Amino acid sequence: MTGPILVFGRKGQVARELAELAGATGRPMTVAGRETLDLTDSTGVADLIAQVAPSAVINAAAYTAVDRAEREPDAAFALNRDAPAAMAAACAARDLPFVHFSTDYVFDGTLDRPYVETDPTGPTGVYGASKLAGERAVANAGGRAIILRTSWVYGVHGSNFVKTMLRLALDRDEISVVGDQIGRPTWSRDCAEAAVLAADTLRDAPDLSGVYHLSGAGDASWADLAAEAFELSARRGGPTARVLPITTADYPTPAKRPANSRLDCGKIETALGWRSLPWRESLALCMTQMEF
Image (cartoon, rainbow, N blue to C red; front, side, top):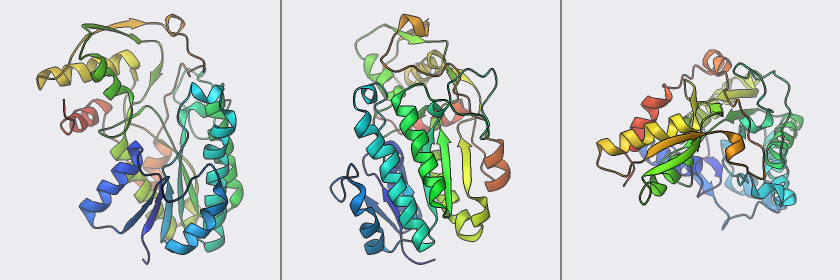
């Protein structure tokens, strides 16, 4: 193994977990944030990869503002399609493992069971469409590449639902939370560890390239996730609130959210040997590291 892992993205949840993982394990890693390369213009991607000479590339950068994407489609597609397309092409040219994150939003959320990788896609908004376009661009590059579709990501760093709920509970006794959207919450640390595993796997087994689903184990609504976070917080003397479950119709947003975001992780368990903890266990571990 020669060269560091090159990570695109610096301030996001997964990128910061990757940096911490590198520090804890001693794994060489170079993290490229916006100050290194502005990915809204992807023309410098290949040059940066050539300069770093990495052993693998992980893309943890993305446009994730789901509602804002409805009015900023060009920005969403620049980061979610064009940038990973350039990364995948450069990695394919150098025969480097490439790991890219995608999302449950590539599906329309209408199935009555967890989604498998081969289910038909059908994004309902700009964000999902831009991420699906990114998936296709990565696949079309033809190199050693794994796409990790994940959902409902939370963690100690960055902006996420759990941290938002805890912040709102600082001055509210009751919070209305959507209860009819179902998913599988995913710890950002799991995303980081699985990405490194995927990169290592591709080095020896390029035939395992493809799309994999990655999420925590077990189903939850947003209301369930909020309630569990408040219970864990209360045990530590942190902010807490009562959760009032509401419907999606009660909380309209510019972008339509999938009613079913559950991802079946059987493929990654079999092919890569990755198995996530039940989401309540992961959330409890995560929250021991949060400062209230």
